[in-house]
Image (spheres, rainbow, N blue to C red):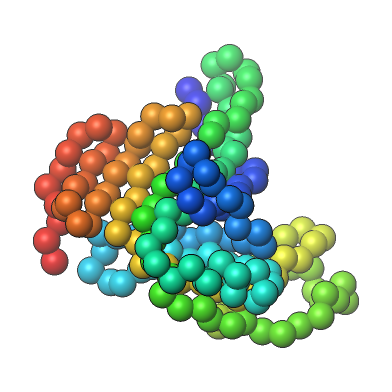
Length: 174
C-alpha cells in the first residue's frame, strides 16, 4: 500500500508548460473549488507585496501551473519516493489583498498551528515562523490535476466538463 506523506516543496509558474516562467515569492497556494455554489477562487499567498503586484500585472486570462513534490511511503516495499503533482489552471486575476506590515522578529511565540485571521495568515511551525502577507485571487475556468503525468481531475466550466480519473460525471447544477 502506498501512503502520501505530504508535499515537501512546490513552485508556481505562468505560461504554457513549454514556455513557463516562475512566479517568485509564493508561500502558499489555496486551489479553487470550481464546483461549489460558493465563489471559491484560486488564492496565491505571497510573502512580499512587491512579488504579488508583479504577479497581478497581466490582467488577461493566463495559464498557471503549480508543480509540487509529494513524498510517499510504499509500506509493502519499505521504500519512500517522490511523486510529481501538477495542477494546470486557466485563470484571470481578480484582486490583490494587501496583508499586514511586520518585521521579521524571532521574539514571537513558537506555537504549533497558531493562526492569525484576516487577509494575512501567520503559521507557526516548530521553531520557525512563515508569514503570508499579501494574497492574489484568481478566477479559474479550467483546472486539471496530474500525478506523475496521469490525469486525475479535469474541470472545465466553459465546456461543462467534469472528469475524475478518466470517467466523466454529470456536471453539477446549482
